[in-house]
Image (cartoon, rainbow, N blue to C red; front, side, top):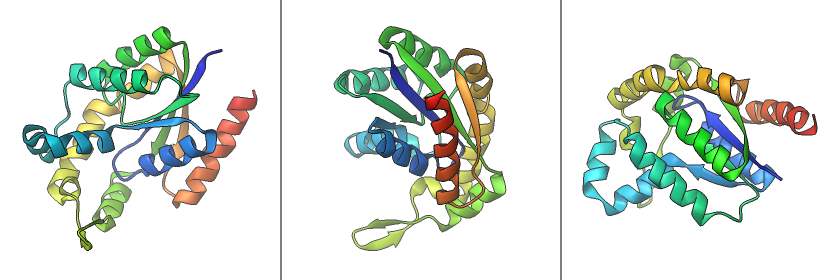
Length: 194
């Protein structure tokens, strides 16, 4: 029997990580969250940390190695929820190769929001470090602008790849997170039962 894999796609501020976490928990799947994994790796690698602070993306080859290692390390997982991979059109074939190699059924979940909503949400997002609230380096306004531009230029094209090679569902990400979760659950209940 093939494993089900969901790929949550959306701009920064769309709530994709929250929704990916909720989806993985609901289904009992293992979650791959690229940002969290990369931030963890960056704690050990100053060069990577400095590179990520600029808002740039890693090479496809680097991401492929990280994802493949994660999948192999979690081979007993009942399914996966990917958040932040694939992020570019050139990473689409990497996912397709993995799907063929491991026998996955892949569904993309595209959470759609406006740039204005993304900027508003990210301007309010804070992290707690050493008991103090702070803005993440990648949530500074100039980095948010760059990341949204990179998303539109490099990530949005992956949507057409999904339409051609996998299933893709579109979710309105503008409402609050619970309403978005409800919409995802309703759509996926129909998809999984069908």
